[in-house]
Length: 133
Image 1 (cartoon, one colour):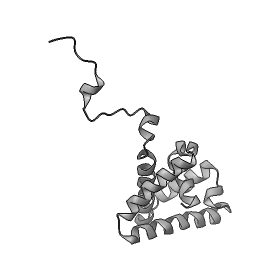
Image 2 (cartoon, rainbow, N blue to C red):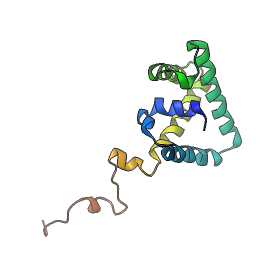
Image 3 (cartoon, rainbow, N blue to C red):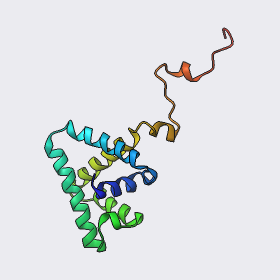
Image 4 (cartoon, one colour):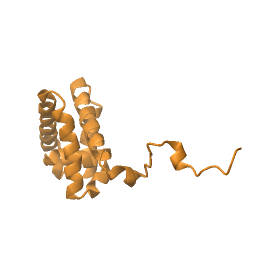
């Protein structure tokens, strides 16, 4: 996937910086699968937003988005999040949604954050009672 997407992912979920190549593949596969289920214009808009991030970084900081330090990346993304232009705000929230879905949708993500849900519900999590109460 695009280096701007990966840099955005790390800015949105800093823990993503620790992902190994297979983790990135899984994250990007989840995002791609989500995009494949939507009309083609959604993926085009995402690519345009990523290009815009790169251009804005070049204009503001004279470096590509992926070459910015984490503080400048976060600052640039915050400017989109808080933009007076609804289209930019929507683009940011779409990107953030995809990144969060990709990161937390990975098989290992639940273990990493201590999520231990069970299909059997709470009884599977609690020890059996010692007889009637």
